[in-house]
Amino acid sequence: MNWKRHLAVGSMALLFAMGFSAFAQDKDKSSAKPSDPQIVGVVTAADQIDIDTAKVALKKTKNDQVKQFAQQMIDDHTKLQSSVNDLGKKLNVKPAPSDISKSLKTAAAAETKKLQGLNGKAFDSEYINHEVAYHQQVLDAAGNVLIPNAQNAELKSALQGAAPLLQGHLDHAKQLQSSLGSSSGGSGSAH
Amino acid sequence: MAPSLTAWRVRQGMAVLLLLSASCISVAHPRFGVSNVRGAGLALVLHASGTASQNPTAAAPSANGQVIMKGIRFQPAELTVHPGETVEFRNEDIVAHTVTADDGSFDSGLIQPGSSWKMTVQKAGTLAYHCTPHPNMKATLVASSGAQMKETHGAAGGLPGFRPPRSPQELHPILVNFTAALLPLALFSDLLGLWLKRSSLHNAAAWMVLYAAIITPLTGAAGWWWKIKSAGTLPPELIAVHQWLGTSLALLFIVLAVWRWRLYRQDAVPTLAYLVFALVAVLALVYQGSLGGAMVFGRP
Image 1: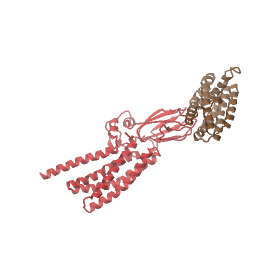
Image 2: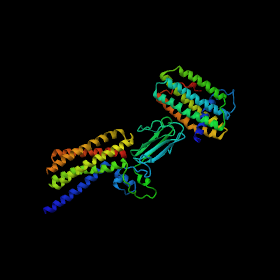
Image 3: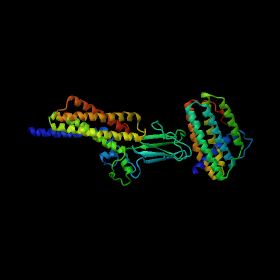
């Protein structure tokens, strides 16, 4: 149970990280620190985005390794999502929208559009490069923004506990990236 | 003068027989001596020959060691076991993991949260493994044949108490010693009988071949039991040869026994054809033993 909470917080951190990278681009817009409900909102959005992107990949890719990776993202992030929900209920924190979660969703919509237009190897390489950049951003955001700003101790430790899972996804995506030989592909849309 | 000379030759022959049987057993178990010395210093030969020490209180398929997957980690990150022992990998995480050898020698496939997967470690060595979906999960199994006496029999450090062998990992190495000793000795006894012109040595040879033919199918059955129980964790290229060569040898020994028994009933001296046939069988047996040793102790 405790571990689930860690994961939930971790996924929130992930979301926050994404928000953070969006945040860094729009410094004028908002310099407010995210509240706990906003952190939960960012994590929920980040989880959902990775699940949705993986669903696109599952439909389009013909590469077995990429398929397996996408399925794993769906499975792992669904679990993470449900632990975030459990923790939110337990702590009585409802996910709240924020500039971070909004810009996450905007960037994700653009990435999905880009992926829809690609096929074959070009698709695989864009998807995996995106996943590397995305998980890296989320990890950075978790460490720099989400964890430091989390007020609730359980939320904070859950965020810390989820970091190794995100690191695992990042390492897995990097392995795929080098086995696909596509490290030079563009990942500019990852924010 | 003549009788004492004969007696001396017989004694010399007996000594050579003993040496030969010893060398046959050590070929079948290449690291035998080393593992005993590293262990308790003194050990019963049969008991030490590659048998797994098992948890005496638990049921047969129970695990000797456990690794928990939790928090995107294998805990403990390094587990020491002994060849023949079973390790249980239990997933207490919220996501699915795999237990995959870095060298590709084993792979659990996805282990869902709340499930576990068991693997029997077949040979000594260090096995590095990871989780395929989460490559940052890395851990090591150390399979050591040397320390098994000391570790499994407690801090007291005494000799293990006697337990009847129950698992194929115990039965197969015990039974194989009989096969490994009887066949070469039967051949040697016939050769010595020809040289010394003593019919009693030929009679002994006939009986030894008969015993070998009776006991070897049991050895083979224990081997097959081990193989089935290990569920694909034995080195595939070694076990493929070992299982069929072993089965062929068990049948070959029966043919050999029938042949030898007919010669015995006719009170005949073994023919050259028989001796050549027996020699081929012995050489095949030595090769078979080296394959078995390689699987239990690793290759030198």
